[in-house]
Amino acid sequence: QVQVVESGGGLVQPGGSLRLSCAASGSLFSLYVMGWYRQAPGTQRELVADITGVGTAYYADSVKGRFTISRDNAKKSVYLQLNSLKSEDTAVYYCNARGRGSNYWGQGTQVTVSV
Image 1: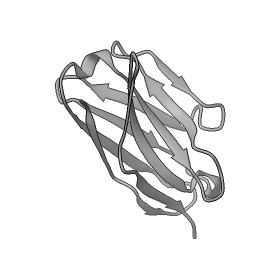
Image 2: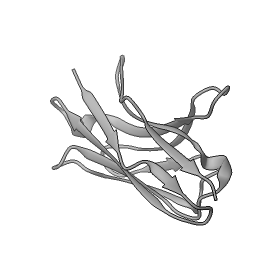
Image 3: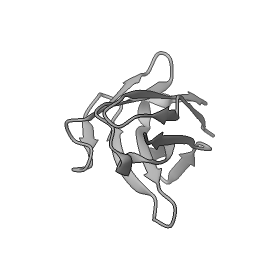
C-alpha cells in the first residue's frame, strides 16, 4: 500500500514558476516509478513527467525544457518544478506511484496560470 499527497499548487502569472511536492508513505518507495499527471476541465488525464527509481526521467513534449521532475528516495518524495508557465498549463496536477500491477494516486493540487 502506497499513499501519496501533493502540495504546492496555486495561482501564478504567465511566465512564473511553481514547485509541486509529493510525499509518499509505504514501503519500497524506490521501486516505484513516480509520475506527475494533469487534468484540465473536460479533458482526459495526461502524463506530464515521470521518473524511475534511479532517476531516468520522461517529459511530455508540451512541457519539455520548462518542467523538471526529481525525486528523493530517502525522503520518499517527488517534485515537479514548473517554469515559464503558460495559461494552457492550468490543470489539477496529480502525483502517481506505479509498480508491477499497482497504481496509486494522490488527491491532486490545482495549478492556475492567469493574469
